[in-house]
Length: 107
Image (cartoon, rainbow, N blue to C red; front, side, top):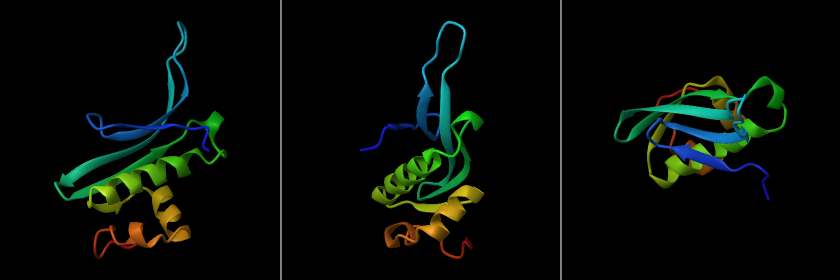
């Protein structure tokens, strides 16, 4: 079981993992995977960010899997312009994900 819980803010169009709660003198710390809708059936996944102090723990993989799963379930085509997501897909060629990559998009 994962120690990370992935949330999805559809209004701000990003998936996130809350890594540190906000305190009176510190804002909350999030890892994010950001996207934008290009059409009702096509989404661009353009940025994945994990704060430096949390990198190297596999956090971005949880975000990638959550986003790919969500958009596959919605039967949406994806254009992963984020270089991390392209690398993830090249290393994890899950048929369900690959079938939802925009036709002609080169990883």
